[in-house]
Image 1 (cartoon, rainbow over the protein chains, first blue to last red):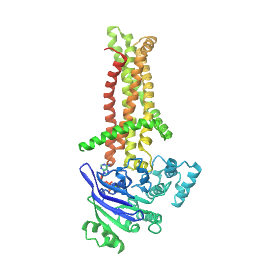
Image 2 (cartoon, chains in turn orange, green; image 1 turned 180 degrees about the vertical axis):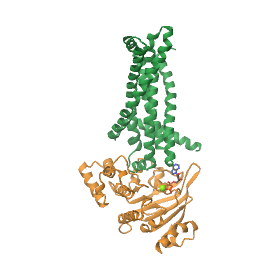
Image 3 (cartoon, rainbow over the protein chains, first blue to last red; image 1 turned 30 degrees about the horizontal axis):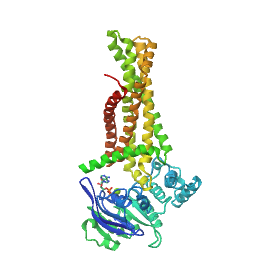
Image 4 (spheres, each protein chain N blue to C red; image 1 turned 90 degrees about the vertical axis):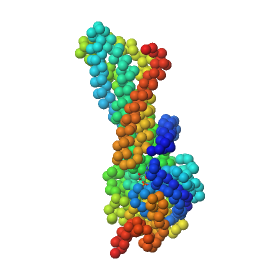
Length: 249
Length: 254
Ligand SMILES: Nc1ncnc2c1ncn2[C@@H]1O[C@H](COP(=O)(O)OP(=O)(O)O)[C@@H](O)[C@H]1O
Ligand SMILES: [Mg+2]
């Protein structure tokens, strides 16, 4: 379980998170909505311990990660896999090497075994044909897929973290990625691989998530399910959700 | 930017500049990265170092023989050129070229990896970015900057020789015999210690600035510029400090 307890963080004079508290189970399917610069990526980085808050506690399975050192953090980070905005592929490596990265770094597996695993994963994500391409030769959607493949290789995460997984993609490709996210999160609640997707595209969020949080001025201004989201009284969030009504009509 | 954050940054820089060299002796070793960096930093800089050194050597030789000629001391051109090149101009000039070409490259590459979250991905996978990114660059600088300096010195001396002999009509063998005279322990040590220190400074500063890049394309521009500016400033300051220390150690008297 992830638990934020009065977490505050500011960069210089800018307050990004202001005494934020929430809880989430690993198997939940959460969408965090919010405008750009509201601290969505920062939130994911805090969960992974890539940043430390100024104050407050972040508990992962009851353990406060804000006091851990970089090497102690490893265990808690292994519970998650992250797909960053734009994919964050290593641009000096081809698709194969990107996906093999964590296997090579961490397991003492022989190269044939690594290759077999990578090929299996790429096949699952429909990427075999791009195996020796460099990231810059791939379309945005393919890059996201490779990033998802890399985040799944060599580890068994309990929860996926997607940072703007569909932003900047055309609607068809975005839909494709949403489908992939849904496939990965298939199954019944306690066992399934849950996720937190961070996005400002509410139309994509509703395709995958069943719990919604709205981040504004460092606080969680809304936390609830789809029906509550549609009925929200918050004028700014209502603007976000307005888009949904057009889609349905 | 408040005081607390400035201190935190200074602390980060100290940590980086201590951990990066420690990484040289610690597993895992990233040989592929080291060789790639050496190729970029060393082989890639060879041409410009040769070009600049040759011309500086020629210009120096010309200036000095012109100054010495009226006093009838033209034959000491070799000695004067040699000492200035080996002790001072060679190391500093090569370091400045290196800062401009390689330091800026390191800062912009690491900066764009930071902005693109590639560095975060390394940390998520449990790879220490200092070991994987900074140490190979430091090693390559510690090997390549001294090597480039030696090549640059040799080329400068050769340029000086060319002007002394073919323009100023001096004796070539006397030029080289003076160069041989000044190739003593003291001069060689003072010439060869400097590039190690400069290489260390340029690599640490550029990598630190690169890894702390924030704020998109503008941030990247700032990072690249500051890497070069800080490297140049620190090279020049440490050059004077080193010269003073080496003078004391080597027992030169002014
Ligand atoms: N390491 C950092 N140092 C200073 N400012 C930062 C840092 N990381 C993010 N910021 C700033 O914090 C704000 C929130 O960033 P982010 O979480 O990336 O927003 P978004 O919701 O668009 O993902 C932005 O204004 C960004 O410029
Ligand atoms: Mg973001």
